View 1 (cartoon, rainbow, N blue to C red):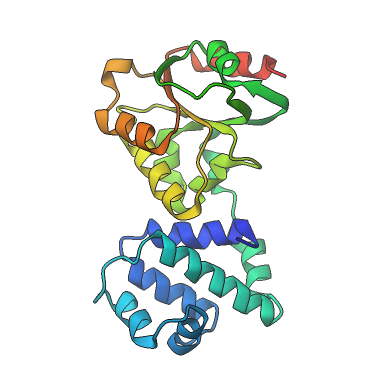
View 2 (view 1 turned 90 degrees about the horizontal axis):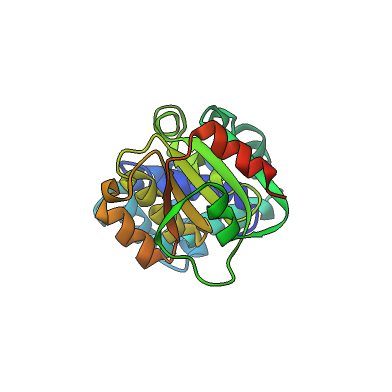
Length: 237
């Protein structure tokens, strides 16, 4: 997807919306396109677009959202990219950082076994052999939910998808895994490993474990004090 940050933002806004049809219509209008124009780009009929927008058809699914977002971007670029440029300047705001406790890219890839050992993590879904971690993000899950729009959750990935996402203050781990599943189904990106902090293995929701297994995302838990966890991560090169 060209202009990926904006594309991720738009796709996230659609799939995390309580009314995806209204979100589709909103973005079509923001880009100044008629139902006929976007339907032509998608090789479908205007009535299909109308049905999605009105809710007469149920949520279109990840494949349609990908194509829809790319059609918006491609059309705008053909017109000079005015909307894209505006979105890149204005939409990706800084609320995300309210929830971030630490975020870093490693200078060299770190074996996932070394990474998990550094934070004294217990594995629930084992990582594949040879997996490396290129960076990590530690977030306060409560602030993430209360302060950060869901469409910005994808910023957990930073500059690489080979990143560990560490969620603090979780109760069962269900919500983070559902959010990751939703985003990865549309954008085909997911963290290299997910770590739930401050929770015992037996308290992790079975659904969270099942999502991790089906999505091939290693899942681990740790109860290392957060200050010590960050200190240990900072010592990794």
